Length: 417
Image (cartoon, rainbow, N blue to C red; front, side):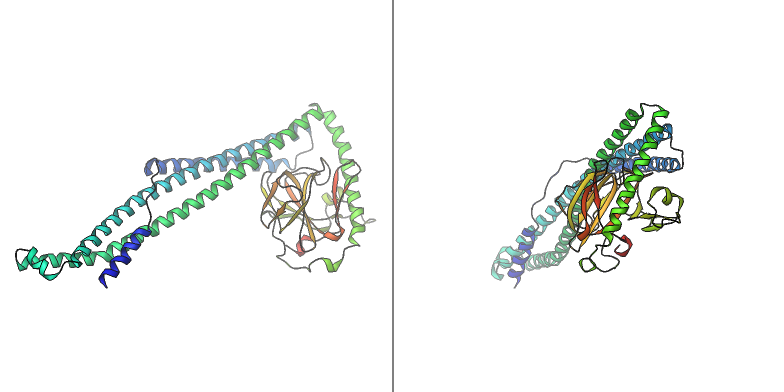
């Protein structure tokens, strides 16, 4: 029986594996650096909050070249600060991984030490177990020596369980640290993806600023003339979309789409809704959307919902599906947009993006990153325009200025979110 116990314990010892040695700074040095990075993160977050307040105040400013340039400069500074924030978080996460690796190394060394102690105890007990009574008597000078040795062996046996418990605890701690390390590595990968996206968004904003200054030649008169012409063209495109979708609405096959039920679609961003679906009675609606009750002139039709976000915020797929469209309408309507065809008869539109991160034909899952929010197209500020169409009516056409335009029978996103 005792020999079987020894074999069992020896097997446990062998199962713990060999230690891995990693060169790293001391734990105290790493913790100090991590704390420094945390202080930098808090300071950068404070700066970003200030830039957001500045951008919010520009929403009500008059449309002048000076204000437009100031808004773009504030947006660029915010994005640059967000990039520094992400870079700092990457550095902090890297330090945390190093700290965990150092702890893992220390635990491996201690685990190996405990394993060796246990192995030595097992060897001593095994030797005693194989020694017969006659050998014990002949090998010791007197009976008291035999008793002392027997007591020593009894103590060794009693310590076996304690050593085994200690090893199990070390193994549990080691597994916990390894899990933390893997989580930090996953966070690091996400931060690196975020940094790449933020860099693309910043490049886009710089291109927009350059385009604005080139078009206006830095002259208010040219800027205002261009703006007046553009606003008329934008209104034409909005009305064209409205008239086309009014006809498509009549072609919706009710049997091809799911019944209204919340939770069918996930929210593509976490921001609050700033504009609802349907006929909206407001000044902004009258000047921005085609009249949905002509003759009264007190409302405009909005074929989706608007969700608040900051330029550069991540936008996610609302449901599993296949990307059916990725295009840019320039200064008109949706600006940079993406559409996803879902397997349940719905197609979703994500508009006013700064960067698109998917391609046509790509299969995506609910919650996958598909792009980054912005204010491209016909937009007065950063937000996501989110529309839902019946797929049986959906197609991608071309507007009067040659830009690819998504068209379909619109449905209320609120019926499915």
